[in-house]
Image 1 (spheres, rainbow, N blue to C red):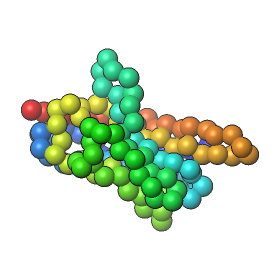
Image 2 (image 1 turned 90 degrees about the vertical axis):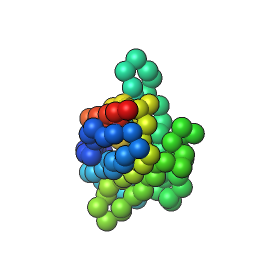
Image 3 (image 1 turned 120 degrees about the horizontal axis):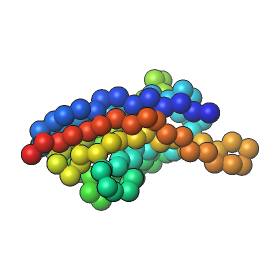
Length: 119
């Protein structure tokens, strides 16, 4: 089982920046994909950004050019650098890990960290 601990959320003004961190209990090379999701009040959880074990990245259209996902294998940590933040980025942000073991893929979630962007 992979344990994930997020940090770095908070309150920021529109146009500002935040960096979220997700520390994993497993070495990242053992995890297929790490991702950040977000869920705003009354909305479904959506993918924000993901990074594979090979370093390939994927972003939601709404954050392209503003957010950057990266990984530090030595620290087993994935980051989400968020810049030019908008009020619509306000949400609870969750770290996700997908790991395949013995042919089965498991998804793990962190507890979430809140991001609030004021206008």
